[in-house]
Length: 190
Image 1 (tube, rainbow, N blue to C red):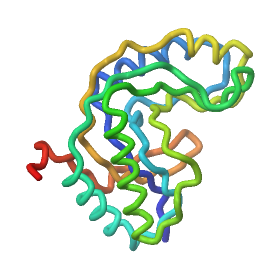
Image 2 (image 1 turned 45 degrees about the vertical axis):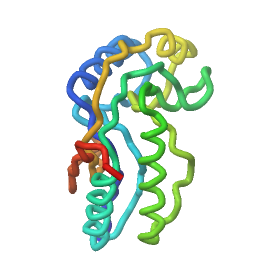
Image 3 (image 1 turned 90 degrees about the vertical axis):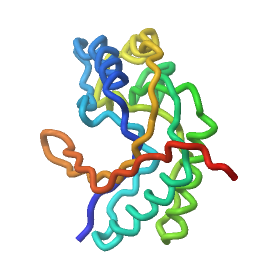
């Protein structure tokens, strides 16, 4: 059997609340957007897709190793963005500011670890973003409206590294955390 998996960093409640407020500014429109539910807001480091059940343990071990080698990240919500063209956006997202280099280093370490486990490489480069919604159909000004209303720059400490199973249902995805590891609390004394 396989599971549909991704690896992410958990968001603190304050960031989720601000993202929900930002989303609420757009949700009243008549566009067809599948909005990410509050409890599912996260920072995806790597989508893995379908993975054999037998590999879950080694993925959890990889996350434990990464958590021991990387410090928590001090970030804040950044500017809004889109994937796709302004006339036909596919995804509405919010960027991140703060320790972006350290975040990129964590994502690169994860990618190396996944390659050592024999998993295929990512099909695109890591882009630090928080997905708010996936657009099914919209009026032309949805992207403009989204880009016009950036969230407040809420500070957040990202410290929980998660291995998550995503089960797809007609009512939307259901997420189950399979492994959770806290990024180390102290800088190493090399």
